[in-house]
Image (cartoon, rainbow, N blue to C red):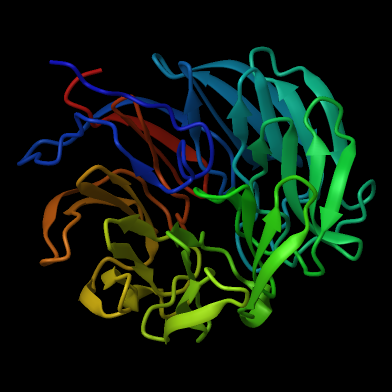
Length: 393
């Protein structure tokens, strides 16, 4: 049996869309449960896990430091660990790590929530260069700390820093020198990404959505979408010339057409509000989680939405808040209480295929990662579990 496998080198996977084309995911389990390959303590935090070329990386907080760890995924053994002094930052929540590392070739890029940014050698953990985006680059730390992941575009590193001199900045990946600054907005919690069709950078910041030229950073389009507390955190979805955005706190969702000189709203709805979990596009439907953290999180729903019309195909209660990814035809949902549910990705009806408890605790908002038949799940308390989900490895 030939099984296509793929790494998961950055937040949201290889394309940043939380979607994997990898074959071999086992969807039906009956009375069985996945085999736990290994477990580790990663420390407090919300950084998700990346996997590349047989190694996995994440970071977590412990005793006044953020620890970045590199793990041999075949046996769960720590290859190297790097510690960075950093406050826990527990501002109305557990605190700890936020942003997810990014690996690109032999370089590993890591942003801490206090603004320290590092480029390291991924093989050894050696620091190649570092800056603080507040002290050195004039950025402004958002309320809950820097949580967006860096974006790597060839020789450029793109960071949302929210400074008065520019809301987004491009650095030279070899030395960390500033290449350009752009945008008059504050940093929020969503990760910038490159357009599929143009040499454009798309960023969801504290004031809404902006599109910039990759070469010089010129802001080409902007669309206002302000959310209370500046929490624009879920990843936008691009398809064609349209972009879907969503946020909570009563704001809701919108589909915007960017084909003309001025962005045009195709539809809006307050019936779908994704606070943190990023939605996923499959064909002409959007799958995601409606709801926000706090006292009402138990009323959250998993939804399927027609992307063109904004009409809800189905919604399902009872799973609470969480996050999701998609592997071909199957949604993998991880609840904030640590339960995994496998759901068929179809607009026809909601259909659960399997479920099992993997993690304990609460506030487990970290998206799982799937690579080479392995599912990585991590709790906010730092419990990292790697389970075998593929039919072959």
